[in-house]
Image (cartoon, rainbow, N blue to C red; front, side, top):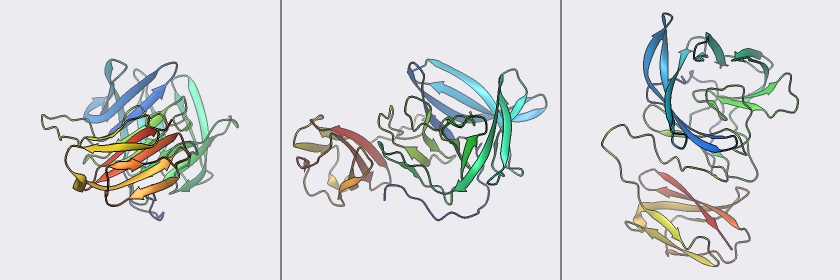
Length: 294
């Protein structure tokens, strides 16, 4: 299975605002933009201590701070919007049927918790998310005054999987909207990754803050696009790779290899024009690439 999901259970609360945690977020509105949000130190505003969230935009050419704090006893997260007072954005103590009311600038929203689960949503055209959190608590919420809106989805310890600090935004699976691409915990471990159809970045690792940059293995398929077969090129040898899995555009696995017998991959019989390749290396990394068949 591509999605690793343990059996759901009530576990110790997973804090969201840990020093060094990162969210890689994709935003689309008339143009696309990649955001990196990182918990980077703390500050005091109106005698209240907040975590500083640095916002870096790779394609937006900006960098600024916003501020949030977390009450781990009440399981609530608060956000400080610029010159306004703080607002409640998450309440992970809610139960099914409970409601949450909050504001964003001049917008007021009210949502009801439809269900709490450990199962992430599936999206037919693309690969499903992968989550390695132990017993994740996933909240599915609906807008009280918007019956046509998609559900909003929170994950305890991560936030909204559309936009991590805009808790009311509905999930659109990255289809011309907001999408959380991946989340790294305070140790640098990627515990959430959503591979959607036109993924703008590969979420290979956390933002490097030191001069020590780990070399990523070069794994390349060519030609791409291809007709009948592709050649797998790696910068070491086949012992680097633990497994390779091939998925069609619906997220259905149609081929897998545990041992690399040949670096010539025959795909002439595959009846799909879009192929996702998931490569797992023996040092625990996962690399996703996209192939296009003519």
